[in-house]
Amino acid sequence: MKEHYYVALDIGSSSVKVVVGEKFHNGVNVIGTGQTFTDGVSKGMINDFDQAKNAITDTIKKAKIASGVDIDEVFVKIPIADTHIHFTEDAIRFGGEATEITGEHIEELLENVRMNDPAGQHETVSVYPVSFVVDSLHEVNDPKEMIAEESLAVKAGVVSANRTLLINIVKCVEAAGLTILDVYSDAVNYQHVLTDAEIELGAVVIDMGLDITQFAYYERGSLKYANSVGIAGRDITLDLVDEFNTSYDEADQAKEQYGHAFFDLASDDEKMMLAQNDSGKPAEVTSKDLADVIELVVEDAFMAVFEDLAKNGINNVQGGFVLTGGSANIRGIKELMQDLVAEKVRVHIPNQMGARKPEFTSAISVLSSGIMFDELLEYVTIDNH
Ligand code: ATP
Ligand code: MG
Image (cartoon, rainbow, N blue to C red):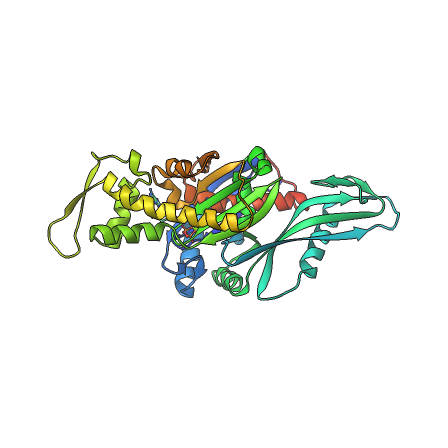
């Protein structure tokens, strides 16, 4: 049987990432990746069409070379920016005829939900089942192969996003010569970084990138809420620029190499020289000096997340907090968060070889979403060698 590959595209504010993978047991096997830094994207949105398009083309090329796979079809993620989630129900009826439920019934149901969703300035991105009800009686996660006589109903979540954001991402990806198989919101994608226990109890995934810190809350098995705040990696670097009178690039490098997010644990002995904007003489700075600035910014971002969660009735996060995204590379970020909350905290780094960086979490989760929906709708039979 033909190998079946999945390709995920994450157009981030800092870089475009592509991951080529395949289903492997219950997870994803990464075959190759590509990454290109770009100025064509800002706050998760395309702000220079040509630059963004070129970055996509370059990244696809890199991923092709790395994986040896020809890429023309991709799954695309869209960020949690101006994103809404609501819940609805729909059903199909069988009129008393015993019917074995297949992926096609599920697809029809989810398509009905999509069609019946009122169109506004928001566009439906993902419809995901919270649960199915067979003959108004049996509530199940996956009704395939069950027999229904009266009806199959679904309780579904609907994720919608800003129409302009979505249209421009789609247009840019197509201009790069690619066919989009499906688009998934990160709100749907991040469920794949949680364990069954976390997602049952109620957990928050926080992805801190360059321009945005996205977060999503899952409970009793599915997505309940998602939003983003505009404090992230760029703000950390900009505050270092201000505090240490140095250039953006110099501050960024210092942050990535010596940065620490938790003042109490940062070292006084780790020293670096930072070129000064207005004098010939570089200044000596310690990791602890950096931490003094970084801690405040990261704490601000976390506080903004907590405030938004509380405003939306999410006060009890028994399953804990999972930190990821490029800015989760920073040392001490877990300890800082743990200092702020009583719940369990962990950092998620993908464990696939070649993609062991938290900035690849979104792209890899897109692959998992692709596999999840394919299995639910019985789209492909995958050969696992
Ligand atoms: P966004 O999600 O905001 O649209 P993005 O997805 O492109 O952007 P990421 O690739 O997840 O962003 O992360 C980029 C950020 O991670 C940058 O601000 C970068 O400085 C930061 N970063 C990367 N490595 C480190 C590190 N070792 N220490 C601190 N920050 C880091
Ligand atoms: Mg990102």
